[in-house]
Length: 466
Ligand SMILES: C[S@@+](CC[C@H](N)C(=O)[O-])C[C@H]1O[C@@H](n2cnc3c(N)ncnc32)[C@H](O)[C@@H]1O
Image (tube, rainbow, N blue to C red; front, side, top):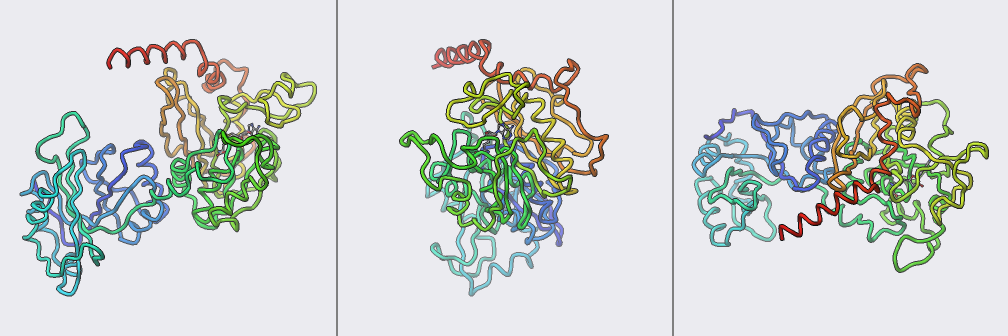
């Protein structure tokens, strides 16, 4: 059935990439909020579909989203949609003519693209589909190389590659407005980055984190577990001033063993400042310090617009904090090889998150966001284990699976209340009642015999299927 559209109505069609699916909705919601819009989908909204029809108050807001998104590919002003060709035609015929006319004028040039999802169609079939649109009053000239206006017919053949229907399940037609920023995933790839480590965050996820965090130009952004600064790189691309801390002296000073296979030692100028310089964002660099996230070094002020971080889970880096000689439970030489933390002791994951949430509650400005990764052992996961804080509201929680039994979840929280002493989360390490106790054994579970057994079983199952 064709969907009627009132004269004032303007809808937008977002075409999304079919990867990082759980991260797309929080990204688009955050970008809408950043641009002064609200998420108002159509009635039959399907979060998993590559096509979303959204009611966005203005084209300016819609364009604002596209300047930031790495989850969406393209945006169209939706002129018509339907389940069948007839539905689409009826829908297009009911679209207000005054919205179309400026783009169909005799002195204009245009082209029509055909895009099919989950099906390949021949060139001839594409031409047929374009010819079937001749009822639209195009008056301009076709120009395939450099048209003023680009239109697109988009056909959705569902998401099951093993059962592709003969006819599309839905068809859309719209005027192309803008592409998203997916090109950043390639141009900021860590493979081509000056300074990297073995836990550098990949470019796509770094930009998604910055978008979930709603960072904007001139914000002051902090990463307490900065490593090689991948998250600062993404935030600086959006015009933020960036700073961070890390307990590892070698990482902060860009010295010690290199992470690249073909290189033994880090070269001169392999550091976070040089990474920002590589992308023309050195002016955004405030500084990075050697500091332990478990010990507060900051005056009690609401200082940061955003805190964005990837804390250590103890898988590819050890979880450590500084300790006095008396507290030492692990000699320095036993801490992972080339890293340099002179006197260190174990830093339990539940404490890392307690400290992080307390820190964010104290040092974020009101409305500022904290975005961080939480490792989880999937068989034991429930929403209850997501750390809570009286000053911070949970905004989104998206899973990235690492294996059948382990995952990390991207947690976004927003500060809604000024911190008071009574809000301080206590360290609950000894309490058997703590819902966060389970985080401490993530490393053991990750490397456990159970894990290996599951992995082996999975490998066997796959082999048997083949
Ligand atoms: C997962 S890595 C962060 C990677 C970073 N996002 C990047 O792109 O390179 C975690 C970092 O936390 C640091 N770290 C571990 N314990 C710490 C502590 N107590 N205080 C501050 N940093 C710590 C490690 O040295 C490591 O660089």
